[in-house]
Image (cartoon, rainbow, N blue to C red):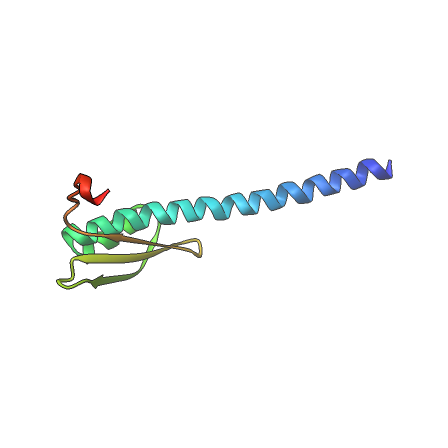
Length: 102
């Protein structure tokens, strides 16, 4: 009887730990999706649209930073349930690749 009870308690503790970890992983995935959407929005339409995209994806916009020689890159940080994610975007998605650069 004691073995059954101790095994049951151990299983409950493990499942509870997995549940907490799964919640953190889902928050991180949601934060990354929101960061990607907000970064693309900021790069093409401005910071206000980026904030709207972050909110629509269940995140809070933490910061927007522009950098590069002509501010052509946008770095966006968002937060979902305490988990932060960062994404970088540029308004033009064209990349020139030639066989010499492979």
